[in-house]
Length: 212
Ligand code: GRF
Image 1: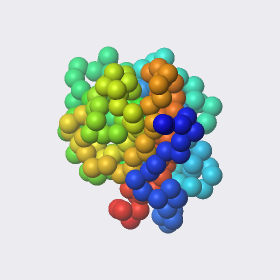
Image 2 (image 1 turned 90 degrees about the vertical axis):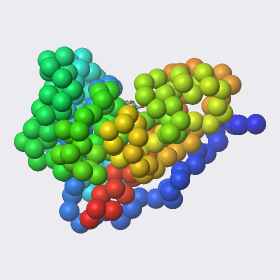
Image 3 (image 1 turned 60 degrees about the vertical axis):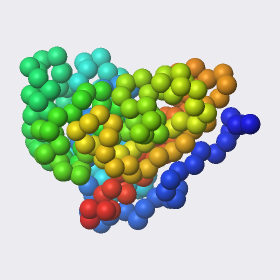
């Protein structure tokens, strides 16, 4: 019987790695509420992640992440995907904006656009994404709904390096979350997000350490 309070498991030890000596410079991409942006900012403030947020790029004028970035004092840039002729054109603008703000890493914190080779080539092995399932199960949109509909008893979240295929690329950290009998997409997503907020700063620190 799965209890609501079951401690989720991580595939790496639940500890903060020794911070790298030089702060890594992050460009965050977000489309939604920005809770992951906030936890990354807080992990930096708390000294758990040796990094600086150079800019938050968002693609939807009404995304809540804009208010959150404002409140946190983060530089933010709107690149509305509807104003670009192609995915490649949007990614070229993203690369330019990241260069202007001197970002070395790209952190997709709820970025709901499909990336192209333009972005991938500009930041080799320096693009991370968070996804609300235990990949390779349930890639793509509606991962939480897919998990509920499939009847799995355990789902979770994944931080991985980004490759061209959607939600593919080497996995850095995963956390497991039990699916409870009365779960709705909202309640399950809420518990998954608690784990996302634990693993995302840790995964960024681990990825940075590997390249330092
Ligand atoms: C997260 O659940 C993430 O896994 C998915 O989009 C959501 C973004 O949440 N890709 P937030 O905007 O950071 O609150």
